[in-house]
Amino acid sequence: MYTARGKIEQAELLDEYLPLVRRQALSMQVRLPASIELDDLIQAGTVGLLEAMGRFDSTQGASFATFASQRIRGAMLDELRSRDWLPRSVRRNARAVDEAVRRLEQTLGRAAEETEIAAELDMGLEEYRQLLNDTNSGHLLPFEALMAEGVEPGIEDASIDTAYRQLIDEEKRQQLAEGIEALPEREKLLMALYYQEELNLKEIGVVLGVTESRVCQLHSQAVSRLRVRLTA
Image (cartoon, rainbow, N blue to C red):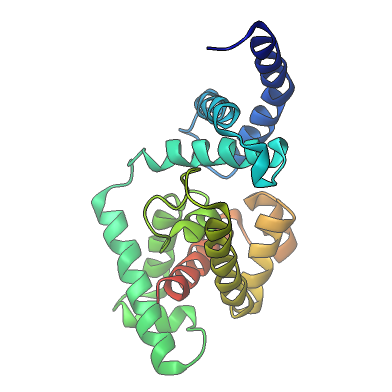
């Protein structure tokens, strides 16, 4: 049971952090298919905020702002992961690209070129690029998805020891940083513009001097390379 003061404090926290929910939802929406509604993200983020308010433990060292931000974003990602709108054929093609990249880079000892990946898949370059366009629509926030791959079940639950969870996160971040560093220069720049500078695909296309469709292809290919490295 909440005390009268407790209810007031909860209401004040809710009012204070709801703008954060909206900001995170807007930031996330620009990287998602048009079918994802902003209101759905806000609703999921609000649930995450309420969970944060109920679970926050000040003795763990983190501030409520940090804890709430993580829970809000986590709730939005959970909502996205619960939606399985990609056809099985697209998922199958994405796995085929991953396997081709894995085989080539193990054999070559370097990042495989597009033409080499296309040849490994026994298809022409344009057909391969179209495949990249198709699979790119399924890369929902690949940075976060890559971070989540390989983590033990339940690792994101707030009841798990904070220090252990932070260790796992740090190891994944280090692997991801090394994977990004090993990307071809143009793909490395693309990832920096997308995730650090937070440019959208059209803006990245202007910087790279290519079409938005080409940015999608390069992004999809970079994600495949990173996924191979993180699941090796």
